[in-house]
Length: 143
Image (tube, helix red, strand yellow):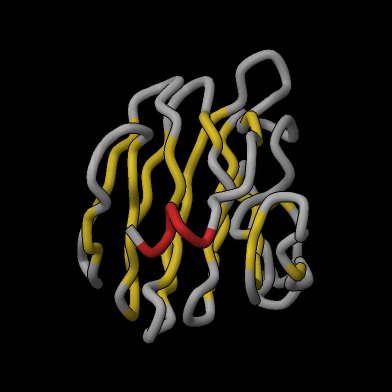
């Protein structure tokens, strides 16, 4: 028998394409046009890992933030920037895998002229996977 949808089948859960709606990135945590597509079942169902496919329009970026268990980004299209607090920003491109150490203050997003899409994977610690901080100023972004 063929199983489809969001049912568990012998210990495997298939989340059907489109079963989790896209979400517009909140202006509390992002600047510019950002779309977040969840990739996994909600954390806590059976795993503490969360993940999303995130699209940043040109000029869009996250606020400064940290992750209690770190974060892995996999760039899938476009060109973006990532920056650790107090350090130079880096160009990131498709195929790049970025590993961010727990507690490191950083931001990431598209360049000013190109969109960027990445898969973001992080793990919960005490029910949280991110600590949002202040917005990245235009001056910080342009530097």
